[in-house]
Image (cartoon, rainbow, N blue to C red; front, top):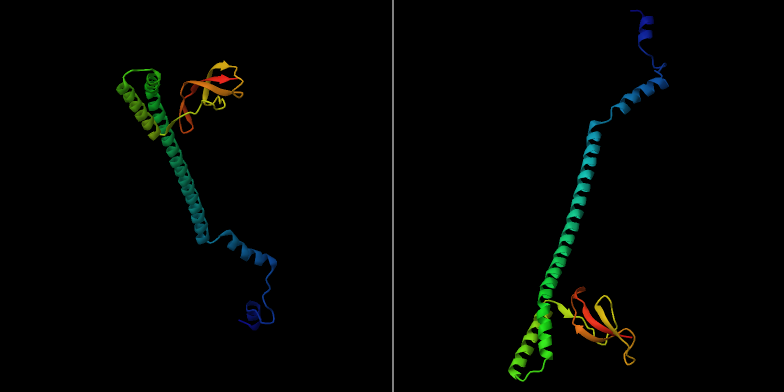
Length: 184
């Protein structure tokens, strides 16, 4: 080979290779087109972890709501059962109350009825069942059932003048409305 041929093939330091913008873009494009497979896998795993965490949080919230709802239903059911049971005994209460109002010559009989009535009241109070206060109280349609009306100036307006049948409630739930006579 001649010196001329060598000069053509070997670049000289005086003539550095110049990169054109086209060759720079060509070098960078393959790198952009083929991203790192580890980064792709990392992103996929991050997305999957976020989805699983979201599912877990939703499931935990759903379970918490279920637990609260069933506790509330259980308490409501317990109150309803107590109210239904007490309602079955209210006719007995009414009969004992009528028996106490009757005059009798037998003091032992009267004492027995009083003791039975006291015991029934204690059982009802242990169950959380209370008598609705009515006599002398302002009339409340949520607690009282007005069956009569009387004009009486000695009593205030919408005041319960007489109680015909006692009312009962279990907490806020009314088992039986008090049957009353309302003044004015």
